[in-house]
Amino acid sequence: MPKFSFSVRDRSGKNITGTVTMDSREQLVERLRDQGYFVNKITEVGENSIYERLDKAIQRMTPIKLKDISIFARLMSTMINAGLPILRSLRIIVKQTENPHLAEILQEVAKMVEEGYSLSYAMGQHPKVFDSLITSLIRAGEESGSLDIVLQRIAKDLERDIEIRQNVQAGIRYPIIIISAAAIIVTLVMWFVVPQFVEIFRGMDAELPLPTRILIHISNVVTHGMPFLIAIGFILWVGAKYASNFPVWNRWLDKLRLKVPVFGFLLRRIALSRFARTFAILLKSGVPIIKSLTVVEETVGNAVIEHAVSKAKISIKEGERISYPLEETGEFPPMGIDMIAVGEETGSLDEMLQKISDFYDREVDYTIDAFTTMIEPVLITLMGVVIGGIVISLYMPLFSAIQNMTDSQTSH
Image (cartoon, rainbow, N blue to C red; front, side, top):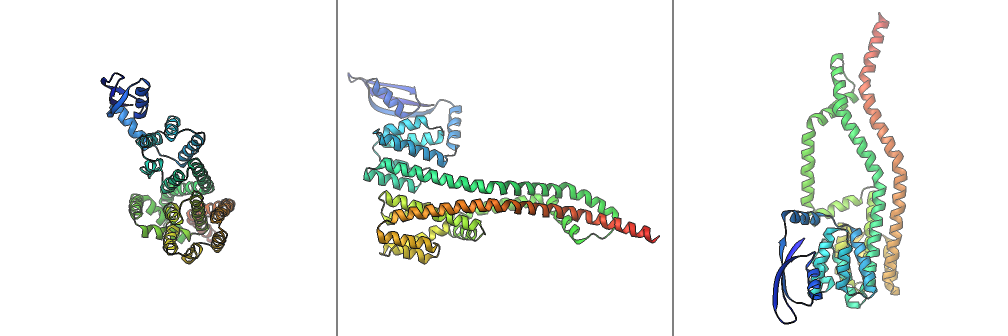
C-alpha cells in the first residue's frame, strides 16, 4: 500500500503536515476534505516495503483481457446514464475491478480527470489498454454529449469480438489437441521404440526395405538432432518476432495466411467483419469518415486489409466515393462493395456496414461448424495412416526374415 506525505490547512489557516498510508491519492484527498482540511500538496513517498513493491510489480504483469475492458465500459455507461459524474464513476469502478493492473491504470485515469483532463485524453495515455478505436469513440461521445451511448457501443463491440474469438478457439481447440497428442506419440516412438528395433535389425544382417530405412533416418534425426532442431526453432521464432516490427513482413505473412485453405477464408471474413463493424460504430458515433478510416486502419488486425484501407483513404480524401477505392484494392468481396455503394446512395452507410459485419460473422460461425465437422474424421484417418505406417515399416524386416526362414526350411 503506498505512503503519502501531505500538507493541509485547517479552518483557522494553520498548516499541518504529515505522512499516511492510503489505498490511493484520491482516497486521501477525499478523507482530508471530509475532515474539513484544505489540501495544499500531496506527494507519494513510495511503498512501505520490498514486498509491496514486488506485489505492485506482479500486479502490473497481470494481463488485461478484452472482457475486463468490456465490463469497465458497461459499468461506466450505466453509471453515467444514471447521472453520476465521470470522476466518481471511475473511483467506484476502481474499487470493483478485480484485475489489479486495470485498477491501477483506472486510478491514473481518474487522477488525470481530477486534474482537468478529458476522459479520452486520460485513457489515450495508455494505448496498450485503450486502443485508438476506444479513445476516438470516447472523444466523439464527449463532444456530442452521448458518452453513455458510446460506452455501451464499445461494450457491445468488445463482447462481439470476445464471442468471435471464443468460437474460433473452440473450433481449433480439438484439432490442436489431436495434432499435439499425435506429435508427442510419434516423437516418443522415434526416440525410444525405433532404436530398439534398430538393434534387432543389426543382428539380422539383411538389407532393410526402403520404408524402414526412411523411418530409421527420421529416428536418428529426432534422437541426435533434437537440440539442433530446438535451436533452429528458437532462432526462427526470434527472427519472426523481430520481423514483425516491419510492415512489409507483416503484410507478406498475412497475405500468405489468407491463401491457406479454410483458414484463409476464415481469417479474411473475420478481418472484413471487424472492418465493417468498427467503421459502422465510428460513423454512428459521429466520427468523420477520414478519421474513422484511420482508426479502422489501426485496429482491423490484418496487415493486408490495413494496407488496402490506407490506399483507399488517399482517393477518398480527394473526393472519391468510398466503395470505388475499396473495390480497386481487390481485397473486398463484390457483395460488400455493392452494399457499401447502396449505403452511400441512400445515406445509410452505417446501417449497411453493420449488416455486412453481421453477414460475415454468420459466415465465420458456419465455416467453423463445417470445419470442426470435417476435421475430426480427417485427423483420425491421418493418425491411423501415420501410426500404421510406422508399425508396418518396423515389422517389414521381421516379416521378410520369417519368410526367408520358412523358404529355407522348405527347400531343405
